[in-house]
Length: 135
Image (cartoon, rainbow, N blue to C red; front, side):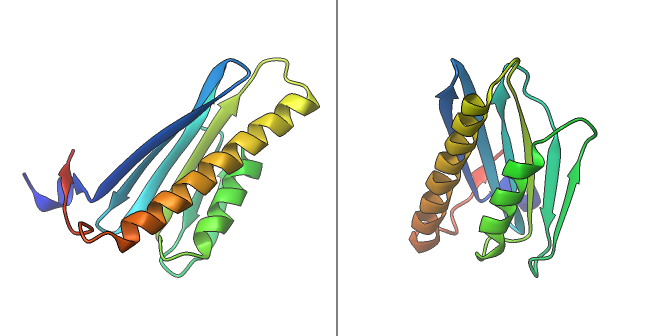
């Protein structure tokens, strides 16, 4: 298999919020990281952040979506790390959610982000860092 078709490291995690999962899928590649965060009643792509190797951030939010709040939080957290370039795609939707439910979703996203940053610290210190896992 071509070396460029392999991820260096993969990580998935999820939390359940309002009886629906919010899922995180991460692929650390040879040059960069791809993060997909989605869930709720209607998973989708609502906002995408791109971090350059130097940390420059660009965020695009599709009309009618508010996923940029979570997307920006994640991009800013990664901006301060060595894990760039990165693409973060967020799409979480719950029907008829109230303010308390929105806060619960935001808290869950923060939990997943904290878990990811912890896993990346462990991976970064790992002696198996160069081992590759095929797609």
